[in-house]
Image 1 (spheres, each protein chain N blue to C red):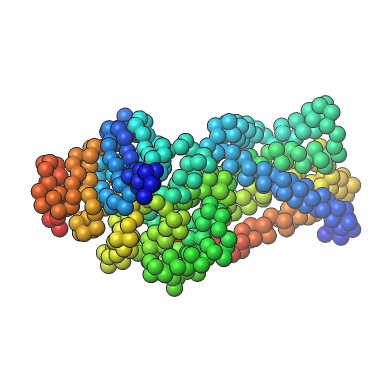
Image 2 (cartoon, rainbow over the protein chains, first blue to last red; image 1 turned 90 degrees about the horizontal axis):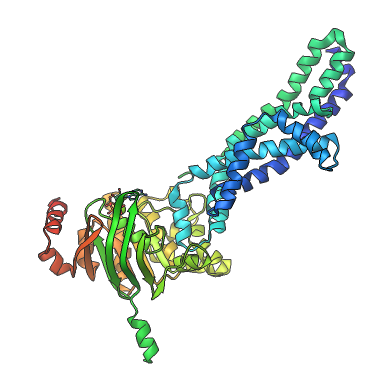
Length: 215
Length: 254
Ligand SMILES: Nc1ncnc2c1ncn2[C@@H]1O[C@H](COP(=O)(O)OP(=O)(O)OP(=O)(O)O)[C@@H](O)[C@H]1O
Ligand SMILES: [Mg+2]
C-alpha cells in the first residue's frame, strides 16, 4: 500500500477530477432529463417527437461514440473547450436520456386519476405537471435516478481516453510509473470508485424515507 | 328581471346534443341527447358498460367526443388549452376512486385550485377550505395526508376540493361505489345537502335510494343510449322500457 501513500496527492487530484466531472454532468443532465421527460409526455406532438427521437438515438449508442462526437466533431464546428468541457458535454448528452427515462418511468407510475383530478379543477397542463405529477413522479424515480448517477460516476472513466486525467487516467499514469505495484494501484483505484458509488446507493434509502408518502 | 337575465336563467346548465363517441370500433355513446337545467339534479343509472362514466366525463372534456356538441352554460366546450381549463374549474368532478393528490395534505388538496386557478391568496384559500372541510365534516383531518383518511372521509375531501372552485355544475361518477357500506351514507348526506342547496348535479350512481330521494330526474342508459328518462317516482313505479325493468329488478333484488 506504499504506492498509495506515496502518491496520495496524485490520487486525490484524480478523484477530484472524477467528482467534478460527475457533479458537473449530473447538475446539467438531470434537469435536462426532466425536461426531456416532460417533452415526452407533452400534448404537443413536436415536443414528443423530439424527445422520443433524441432518447431513442442517444440511449442506444455506446458512450465512447458520444465522446468521439464531442471531442472531435464539435471542435471541427468551431466549438472550443478544454478536454474537461468536452467530457462534460458528452456525459450530459448521454446521461440526459437516461435521466429522462428514469423520470418518465416515475411519471407513468403516477395513477392516471391524479392527472384527471388536477385537470378537472382547472389546472392547465404545465401546472398539472408542476404541482401534481412531477412532485409524485420525482419521488418514485429517486432509485432509478441514483442508478443512473452511479453509472455516470463509473463512466466518467471514459474521459481518460480523451485527455482528462481523472481517476482512471491517474491509475494508468501510476501503473506505468510504479510498474512493480500495479496490483496495489488497481485496487486503490477500484476503492476510489466504490467510495463514491456506495454512499450514493446508501443515500437513496435515506432520501426515499424522507420524502415518502403513501397512497 | 331584465330580459337578458331571464334568458340567462333559462339557459340550461348543460346541453348534450347528438353526442357520439367510439373507443376503437366500440360505440360507447350513441347519439345522446340530454339537457340539464340550472339547479336540476339528474341521476344516471344503467348496467355496467352502458356509457354512464363516458357521458359524465365528456361534460368536462376528460373524454373527447367524435360528433355532436356539448354546451356548458350555453358555451360550447373549447378545445384543450387555457379556456378549457377555465371551464373545467367551474365544473366540479368527483371520482369513484377519490383521486386526492397523494403528496399533499387534505388542506392543500382543497387550496391548490383556488390559489392557482382562481388567484386567491394563501390565507383566503385556507379560510375557505377550512369552511368547506367543516361543511363536509372532515375539518379535524385538515392537516393529515389523504392516505391517513378512510374512503368516506377522502371522498368528502374530494367534494370539498371541487366545491372550493365555486363550480356551477357538479359531476359525480359513482362516488360511493368504492366505499365500505357504513361510509356510504356520510357521502350521500353531503350530496343530498348540496342538491337541496340548489347545486346543479349530474350523478352516476347505483344508489337507488339516493336517486329516489334526491333526483329531479332519472336517466336510464343502456348500450351507449339514453333509453328512458323520467321523474324518480314515475320511473321507479313504472319503468317504460323492458331493459329498465330488467335492470331495476336486478338492482332492487338485493
Ligand atoms: N378508455 C377506454 N378504452 C376503451 N374502451 C373503453 C374505455 N372506457 C370505456 N370503454 C368502454 O366503453 C363502454 C362504456 O364504458 P363506461 O365506463 O362509460 O361504462 P359505465 O356505464 O360507466 O359502466 P360501469 O357501471 O361499469 O362504470 C364500455 O363498454 C367500456 O368497456
Ligand atoms: Mg362507470
